[in-house]
Image 1 (cartoon, each protein chain N blue to C red):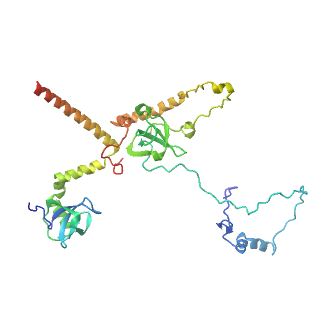
Image 2 (image 1 turned 90 degrees about the vertical axis):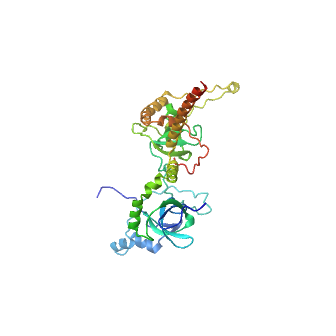
Image 3 (image 1 turned 180 degrees about the horizontal axis):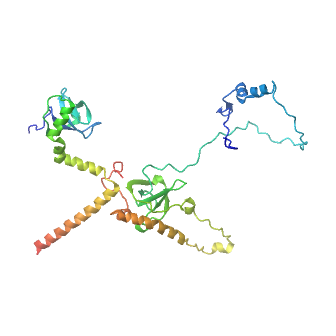
Length: 233
Length: 134
């Protein structure tokens, strides 16, 4: 027996509905084994002497009692999980983005982040899409796959893409009337380097397949006669 | 304009409606005015309304209601598969199926190929035009 390993204790009297247990008082008496404890102790429940307790300072009775019974909250065992990824989307799949600034662009899928969003890259040199997060619902997965084994995406997570928190500047009266110079937020060099390192390995595997580079550089659009429900992607 | 394709035992037909859509079947017996008993190597012999069948030009030589083994042998002997796939109707169906199964990447590659081909044709045409005007 492994030392000090306690399994979390399952409730002996599960709730049928909130406030009503499955077993009656007599049944619970039996389940708890009080009859066995009594039998072991010769017919009465074992007592021990009360420890002498120092007199607690007298508490004032509370001014407020809740008028109705306070209900016990329902138990919630749900765990937060990232969105279920469609079976057609695997690392290296070419996706078509359907909305936003890059709509119609064909893009390579890297991995799913813990928030459920998909991490995606153009590659930047080919079609101008940087390392970006995209929602699964706004994407069509094609059956074209790119070899992504040479790419390291361990360091990217949702925090990497979060908005930078700026320090609040206190405005004086005079400054209200001055034209506020907005600092143009430049992309930090670190992010540019990340983009380059991810794309370097990717572009090599893309150039191995003929026409794939120009495919990723072109946008998708529906033409006359194309029926989306009949198209195989 | 007389009829050329007749409903008879041994006529190959294409199923145009229902669960077996697109299959080639052999008419093995005629049940009544509207229905035939049809059979194919990969299906259980059953009845079909003529409305669900489109007759083809191909006919094989079998007796009324042969057993499966004889039927398959007769189909092999008449070389129905190759005759069908080399006929213009059969070829059209094959191309339609191929087009329907094209990937997005395949469609892109086809577009590039079409543009290239058109470019070559246009060049030749320009050359010919030059020659005739010169």
